Image 1 (cartoon, rainbow, N blue to C red):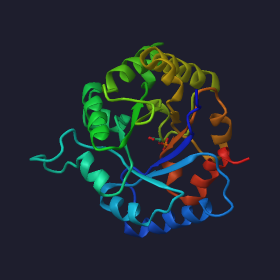
Image 2: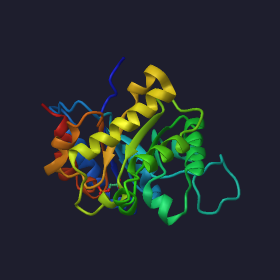
Image 3: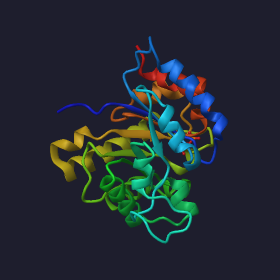
Image 4: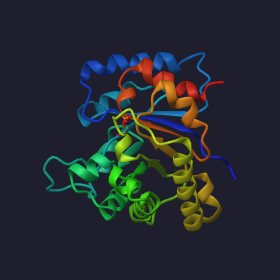
Length: 251
Ligand code: PGA
C-alpha cells in the first residue's frame, strides 16, 4: 500500500489582509526552485482573500478554506458553500476545527455533513479531532478522539478526499505539546480505526498533528509513527517560520 503523502498545512484563522499576499509570495519563493521538500504545502487563509490567494498561488502551493456550509446555496446569511470555495480555486477545506466546535457549537454530525459537502464540491476535507485538557486529565483522550473521528466522517470518505488532523485543544496556541509517546498513541489509534473502517485503504489516509507546531519542534514531531504532516496555526503566518516547519520534510 502506498504511504500517505505528507502535508504541511497552514491555518491562518482570522488573520490576513490583502497585503498578506507578500507572505504568500515569500513562501512561494522559499518553495520554488531548489526546494526539495517531500511534502505537499497548503495555506488556508480567511475567505475575503481566498480567491486572490488561489489565483496567485503557483504549483508548489495549494489553497484551502477554514470552514464551509453544508448546503450548495440558499438563505444562509454569512455562510459560504463548498461549491463557492471550489469556484474560488481552492482544493481543500478544514472542517470541525476545535474553535468551530467550541465557538459555534459544531457537533460531529454537522462536521460530517460539512465534510460530505466538501466531497460533493470535489474538495479534500481536513477533518479535525482532539480532546480538551479536562478530557485528557480524566483519561478519556482515546475515547473522545475516536468518537469524534467516526462521527465526523461522511459515507463519501476515501483516503483521497479526506485528511485527519489530530489537534489536542489544550495544545493549540499554548506552546504546549503532548509527549511524543502520547501523540504516537493517539495517531496509532486513529490509524487502527481507519483500517477497521476502510480496510487496507486505512493506511493511505494522511493523519496530521496540530497544536503548537513550530520550526523548533517540527522535525521531531514529524518523525513520530503515523504522523503524516502538520496543521499549523500561529507559525504559519510568517513565511520564514512556516518554511522552517516544512524543513522537517527536507533532507
Ligand atoms: P497553533 O494552532 O499552531 O497556533 O497551535 C494550530 C491549529 O489550531 O490548527
